[in-house]
Length: 609
Image 1 (cartoon, rainbow, N blue to C red):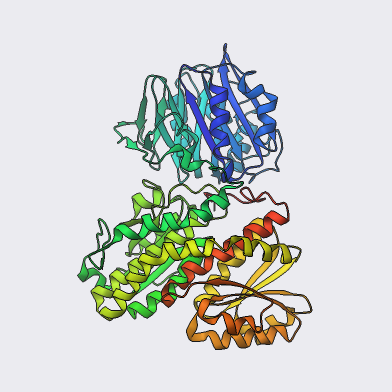
Image 2: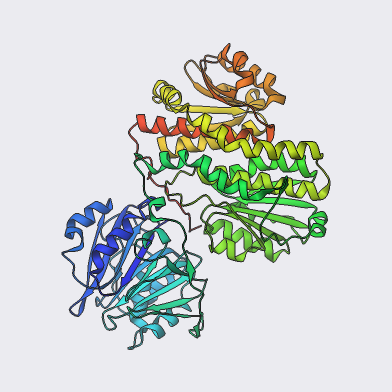
């Protein structure tokens, strides 16, 4: 959600902090601020609104000199967006400055305790408690004071801490909220995302839960939760900085939609070798696969929709029960999970807090956990028994596109790998699907070539205020993602329904001029999908259909507009079908003048419950 960046070195800190924060804008925020030490005091500048407001206020950083500082972009949880509630927060004497991602769950009790001791508070946030508590315990040793604080606060947090008594060091703390350290030449960094510091260094340390680090210009020393020194491995980031730039596109979302064919090549091609699925470093044995009695797919948002599609495919391929659960519900539903269950957790960032909590609950119950993630070294990757990376490259837009496509590809490959070992798929079909998967990226390029036609359709329908998606089987699951994309970035009310449920209440919402996006790609149920189109049209609906080339003629007879995808194996239809829905959502939002990469109230990585 929020973004953190910190710097200690020989250069002026404020411009570096602003640059880092600009690369974290995609995470979602409503205010920004920096704190920089200079001449015996910590100077703080912060403001509600976009980062540019802050940058103008401090003249691009020139108005606040100093070579050590911390910065933050805030997405409000406790306290409304305001200058006062913005980070960094400063202790009452001005000695300690803190930036914080996450939620301090027991902040109310701690605040009451400190107020009883005469400590004044100025904000409504939970985060200010940390700054005030560090000063309360501070007796000349900042690390020791931070250690005492960590034994008293509860919740999820990534912290950057600066003290004017020790102006050569920053302290970083992580628990259930992402934080990485960057190693430069006579300079070091902390950040909530590597994109913030990639211009300065590719050498990073991934902090684990409970760890603390002290950063100076000369080096970084890490400690465990008992404040005992530990040695950490330094990882090398291997993607280029321009991968996180727009590259001439108006929006990151447009760029990432167009990057999907190449992302699929990276995901699929290395994993099909000599006519077989090859999964790198796969830790489950054939015996363990055969021993599985049930699979759970656990995820949030678009990743959950990947799981919804995957359920149809995996149950057909494996002939084993597959349940799909929202990660935020998994812990509270008392799931029936044991050592014969495989829990597949899916997360783009690998840091989604609800998904992380579900992973830990699954392991507590004895299940094996397999993670499908994009970010190497992320928390979910480190805590899972098996990891399959999507290799999608950095995804900056809040509304996911290529993460969805690559997650779905990995889940399909996993299903084929399991089916081969279980003997539940005929060799001919297995070879056919793999062959079609190798053609998928080229077919996706064919779909993307129709973007001008989809833009025209968006120009016809962008002024609707309520849109319904309907489909059957995988088309229903695909409609869920299409609907989410639309509402995320265009703010149009949108719902997806299983088409067979129309007569059970949904059809009462259809009236003259209602836009219905009818997803009808699944050939086995196309006739039923066509009947549903006729049904809603008879009630006055305007129908925009998504179907395959082989069904285009019949659908054209009844629909008002059409989006087409090439024919492929039924298992792969959602991989192609999602692209027109992404483009449609993008162009609708563009016509409505929305802030596409930074939709209101949303964040890229949801790291609070």
